[in-house]
Length: 341
Image 1 (cartoon, rainbow, N blue to C red):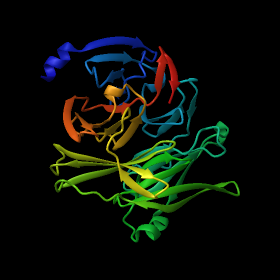
Image 2 (image 1 turned 180 degrees about the horizontal axis):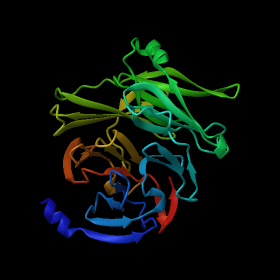
Image 3 (image 1 turned 60 degrees about the vertical axis):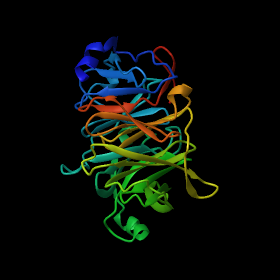
Image 4 (image 1 turned 30 degrees about the vertical axis):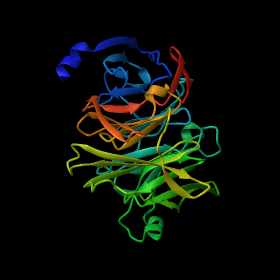
């Protein structure tokens, strides 16, 4: 079956420019593990039609996230922030504060770059420490700083075994989730006498829900937008995570200070990449017949589609098991021109 799909694939060369992407569809972009070679753009509704590009800013870099119209890129210890609309790129200093035994988990840009204190915040995998770089300053003043937060987090969760993951932007602030999935933490970035300080506050607890069966593996995820905060649970039937069992989606209701289960997301889609750091992407206002799904790329390269309204799971197709795959959160209205992110 996979061989037949490969034979039927249609490849369109786009050179060093972004392809003409319709805003009606959710577009995925696949990259080689080392960031070299072509970038491949394709949609879930027609995954056999591939747009092959060699965009200079993406060569050698991996897409790590999209925030406030900027794309976060990384290549080992080199990080940069790229605006596809203006082609402006900000190259950050080498991440020399990262030890050889450590690896970056996820990232978040705390605010738009025209705000007074925009900060690129990184988590370290399974370690209660932030790495952060203040943007919006002259290039010779860019620098990375480390900040352990184990004592702050211990006061909230009661023990020293916690660390934060899934940092995300929502309603003007940064939020993250404790690795136990039970605590949602507000990450306040404060300027005090010219120095940046980070203060952790408990924002909420995990949502309560009745599972239709007992799953051995459940992966909690947090995703925010400017005005919405979502909590997603991806459950597997086996410890080896071979088969997707169920998916749960909740939205934070600020007026009630609690999570409410969502029964439909209408013209929006989520894309969860469990193969590369449990990244979560979100797009709204796409074509109505394509909305309403949570698409999940698992560690084996399988692509599942969960229909939020019907609560059904379908195996879409084999994606790129050895590639970095992300949902292109920027929207397009004209060929080669970004509309907005």
